[in-house]
Amino acid sequence: MIRFYNGKILSLKNGTEITDDEVWVDGSKIVFVGKNCDKKADREINLNGNLLMPSLKNAHTHSAMTFARSLADDLPLQPWLYDMIFPMEAKLTGEDIYHLSKLAFLEYLTSGISACFDMYYFPEDMARASVDFGFRTVMTCGLNNFKESIEKLEEYYNKFNNYNELISYQLGFHAEYTTSRELLEGISALAQKYKAPVFTHSSETESEVRECIERYGKTPTALFEELGLFNYGGGAYHSVWVNDNDLEIYKKRGVYAVINAGSNSKLASGIAPVSKMIEKGIPLAIGTDGPSSNNALDMFREMYLIAATQKLKDKNAASTDANKILEMATVGSAKCMGLDNCDIIDKGKTADLIVLDLNRPNMQPINNITKNIVYSGSKENVKLTMINGKILYENGEFVGIDTDEIYRNAQKITDRIKG
Image 1: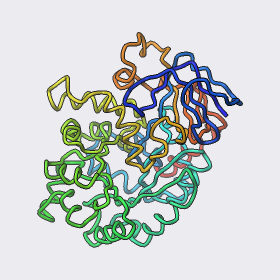
Image 2 (image 1 turned 30 degrees about the horizontal axis):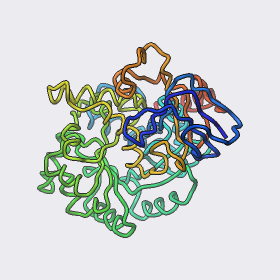
Image 3 (image 1 turned 30 degrees about the vertical axis):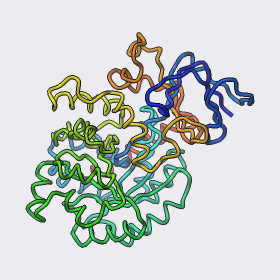
C-alpha cells in the first residue's frame, strides 16, 4: 500500500480542479482518494507540494523505430519512408523489436508516459518486451500490401486481447496508400465481426489525399466510411489534410483524430485543424509518432507544439485552450486507446500516475498549474512515473532496470542495420 500525501492532486475527474486530497494505491488499483484514510501504508510518499496526476498516454507511435533516430533526417515523408525507412526495416527481427522497444520505454518513463499505442511488426516480441519491462502497451497492426495479412490481424486481435493485463490489441492497417481495396474490405469485415474500432494513418500529407482522390474519387476518410471501416469508431493518425465532410464522418463515427504535431512539423506535412476539431466536438488524442520521424518521445513537447502551431495556423493567440490540450494527452488518449480503467484518478481506477515537480524554476511562481504544464512544463518536471501500481521511474532514476544493457543492445542492432 502506497500513500501519496501533502501535495496537489489533479484527478481530471472534474475538469482541471486541483485538490489537496490524499491518494492511496494498493497493488495495481487506487483504493482511496480523499482525507483521513484509516488504512495502513507500507510506503508513504510526501509530495512536498508537488502535483500528482494521471499519466500521459502516447496514442500513436512506432516504438522500435528507435534504431532510426536521426538516421534519416531532413527529408519529406515519401523519400524518408520509401528510400530510407522501409529498406532498414526489412532487416529487423523479432528479437530486435524486443530490445529496441525497451529503449523507447525508458524515454516514455522520463516523459511521464505510462502507455503507448504502438503500430509495428512482430507483436509477440513487443508484448514480451512490455510485460518484462512493466510497460503498458496497446498494439495495432501495420498491415499493408507487403506485410501481414487479414488472417494474421485476426489472430493477433484474439491472442493479444487475452495475453496480459498490460497488453491489449486493436484492429488497424498502415494507410490507404499502402493497402489495397481488397485488404481494406477484409479489415472492414473483421471490424463488423468483432464490432471493433479500426486505426490507421490518414490524411497525413496533401499528396496522400490528392492521390487517393485520383484513385477512388474521394478522400481517405470518405473511402473508409464507404467501406464501413469506422462503423465502430477508431482513430486516424495525423488527420492534417481533412475537409469538413471528413470531420463530419469523424464526429458521426466517434473517430479519434490523433494529433502528431512534432512529426508533422519535422516532415513539413502540415498542421492539423485542431481548433476546428474542438469546435465540432471531434474526439481528440495526442501521439508522438515514432522516434525516427519526431525524433523525441516527449509528450510535453507535443502539447506545446499543438498549442503554438494552432495559434499560428489560426492567426489567433486565443486559439486552442491549453487545458483542452492537457486533457487530450491524458483522458483523451486513454479513451482512444481503450484504457478507460486508467484515464483519471478515482477509487477503483488502475494506478497509472505521475508526480510533477512544481519546485523547479519553470513551474514558479504558481499561477495556473495546468496551463503551465502545457506552456512551460518539460520532462525535467517528471519526478515519478507509476504503471499498474509499480514505480518504474523516481527522482531521475530508473527503478530495477538495467539501462546499460538496453543501450548496448540498441546500439548493436542499429550498427548491424546500418551496415
